[in-house]
Length: 485
Image 1: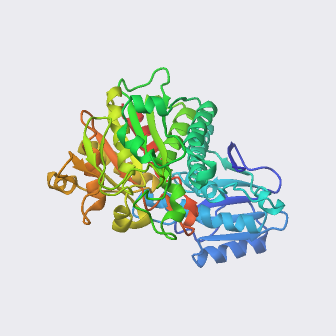
Image 2 (image 1 turned 90 degrees about the vertical axis):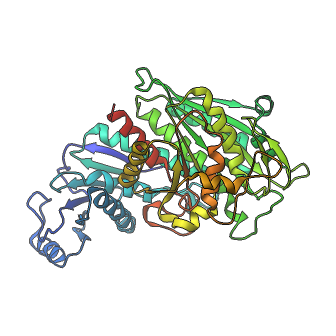
């Protein structure tokens, strides 16, 4: 990212492009705002009287942008509206070729600058990509956003978190020929070196010795070996004696295997099938950069899923890391197989809580669309409520689905302990019920991010393609856990 956030004690003395955030209902520019010539002041007051929520005053040497906060039902919704205002403001800044912007928050509680900057930053994200023309390689005009009166620590923490989101976006946006399972492991190692967390990558022989039958089966049709990467952040003075463990689905490309996906509107976007893993990399990056006093481990099983000569087939029975046997009824239900091995492996850490994230089912996407995340699990109700609160704060909202005992019937097999497909109904739940069988001994939450993780059309500050979904949600949830201790 070429955009950087920084604190500022005051506005510059000379001309400076500035945005002021005004309280809802403001009808005239207050005296605390930068002084304007009479005609410009009159124009601004006319715009406010007409209830224009976002406009610019062109002063020729610089511009004053005005954002009026909307009065929403909750502070969380007000913050989300300011993120969206940041997205709208970004278009005006680009049109004016603004290089540096100052944010002056004149709302009563001074809570507007950070969400506005967040929306600006996430909107400014551009995947570097692989184009070779000079215009495509030219960096964006906007380089600096200065937040007036906001503590330096708050600004730095936000930027580190948003760097974690953009890291996840970059990883999701990389095509499979640039991000094999081995490449992905190297990217995680490099992120660890930059941020300060440790990484260990288990190779094929080690994975085989651990008898991770799910990961090995999915990898059978691929010319590339699988990897299993362990990221760990354990600072001195960590508050939790037992670690939080994060698990991310790392299918770097999914053809569906022998149960081949259709193309287009199927296989063509499947470089995104490692978005759950990418999210966990982003969370680990933010935790380490912000020196969060928690012990957190992230487990990333990674492979592609291809219909090569040795590919696993519908009807196969495989033995998982836990020892359970699985009848494979569909090779396109592969994500749960590699997650199951990682969830079983997580038991060795005696975790306080395990959270997994995965682009797991079309059923979840059809149920609630790109507007939310399907969640389920065995964690206590107060933990699920805390996650829901984090979802409202970040506007990465969760919808909890049930895991009733009756759903176990959906994954019964005639010849193995369970099958990997379930029924046509409640597909997201039967996938969760499958994973639950591998989470014995610890509380667990499953996040199905199939719909919001990768968008085929722009959506406000989430943009197009990889969104980095769940990075801000999980980070915010974990931060709240530190504050509650």
